[in-house]
Amino acid sequence: MRARSIQPILPSQVLFFVITFSLLLRVMPSYAKLSVVNSADDRGDHLISCEKQSHSSMEGLGIKEFLRRKSVLVTGSTGFLAKVFLEKLLRVHPDVSKVYCLIRAKDAAGAKARFRSEVLSTNLFNVLRGKYGTEFEGFISAKVVPVVGDLTQLDLGLQKNIAEELFRTLNILVNCSASTAFDERYDMALDINTIAPQRIVEFGKRCLHLHVFVQVSTAYVNGTRQGLILERPYKTGESIVNKSFNLVLNIEAEKEIAKAAIELFKTENLNGNVLAGEKQLTQKLRDLGKARAKMFGWQDTYAFTKAMGEMVISNTRGDLPVAIIRPTIIESTIAEPFPGWIQGNRSRRSLIFTYNTI
Image 1: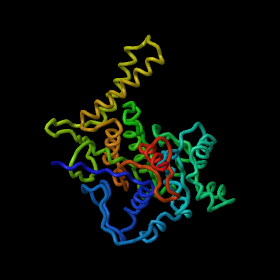
Image 2 (image 1 turned 90 degrees about the vertical axis):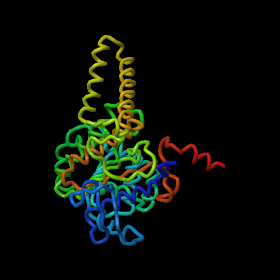
Image 3 (image 1 turned 180 degrees about the vertical axis):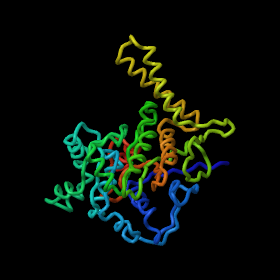
Image 4 (image 1 turned 60 degrees about the vertical axis):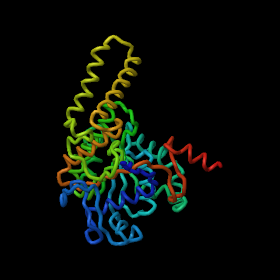
């Protein structure tokens, strides 16, 4: 009998610890021996391996010292995970230098407005707000810089002066962005989950003082395989389908397949209803993504394109320090900043609410 791989729910602040600990992978030789995905020091098969001394706090591990006066860029800033990361970063490490939050908007004013309405206004920041009282707004203004950006564009869609500032000063780059719909349009999922990480790597290579690029992936890149599954980086072109099929995954070809599907549909529907045609195209691209994923052994478009994202990072990073994190289901906070904070229609929200009313 084969044992199924167990994938537990991951409390949000546990993930924060994993992220902040991963920031030490390249700078803490006295506390830990670690190897990261295809790191310049060790190109072994382990995603993250660690032999560390016993420490009971972030300060003991050296995380607080490492983050002091560091400049951080976070993508996916208005999403659930990035909010939790930002709140704890500011609350536990207030002496961080700057946190740049990349936000899609028309201009700087729009980015600031989205940051305030979609991030800062949430009750997740109530503890931090209470800690600083009347000085809260000043603290946020001094530490957080919402910037206009778009991961589908060159230089992450940043304004030239902001990009140049980051090239000079950025120390930590955390990619929390993702298209998480299991049945997303194939072209869109490729753009955000596969191509965008490559753009981020290229951006990171131009940063003069970057210590680490942290890519938040997903445990579901392991697909539906059963038994003991080792955490290791994917090799470019690797497939998890039955090896007897001898399939080779070509990421560039997958991009072209998505483009060709769009062009073919447009050619065949030149005189059709535009709105109806767009809906049909969306469905065709959703079906295409699921079909391509299953062909290579993945269960859905999301897991497939995230796996390819890991591949392009591994293939293009050069000597850029990289940590890839593979969380499973991320639910509510367990303790910090207070128990039970949750956002959106997350997978077990209804169960949690029902339990609390019993």
